[in-house]
Length: 262
Image (cartoon, rainbow, N blue to C red):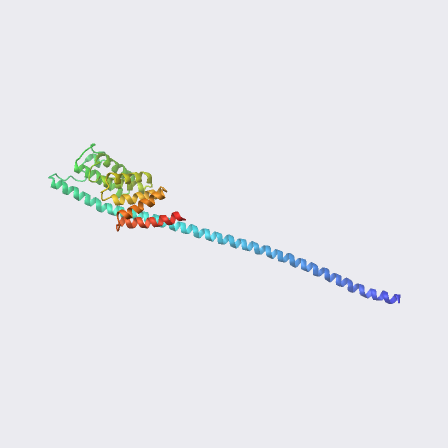
């Protein structure tokens, strides 16, 4: 009987050991699988973070591109308006010269050539308080040639000289306008604003008053005076309805409102 029991135990023990080994192997396998799943989960998180970073970089690039396009549009609009001013100025210069010659002819005064005044042609100043129409016209033409040629520093100097020596001349409002324009183009917006406002104060009925009022609004925008600029642009549209400046003011006001609402 004892021998039978011993034999049974000998046969049972190897089977028990095999089951134990299999159980341990299963446990190790499960642990390895869990570790592998954790590793895969970590890799997945890393991949998601990398994807998010890539998307953020792409969005940042799109934002920068949109900002660049917006700046280009603003620069283009400014350049177009400056070009328009220059073309109007060329027409204006010809009309002013013709008017001056006609007035002199009617008065029986000989028409002097553009460089008749040697002091003005040489860049000097005419006598203070001079009321010589030929000298005034020559001084204005000299200043206008400078701004047409893109020499804005010289143009501002010449227009200041003209205003100082011919404050009551018929071309004084035009000189004030182009003085302001020479400052505006060179981004000296505070001085440009003063010139346009001086024109409106002294010559409110001038043909250059509508353009000057519009440029007051533009200058205020560049100086970040947004509330004042909105009021000015609305005034342009109300005061000169249906005009070119009213259309420009309405368009610029719309862009300004969108800009300041963000």
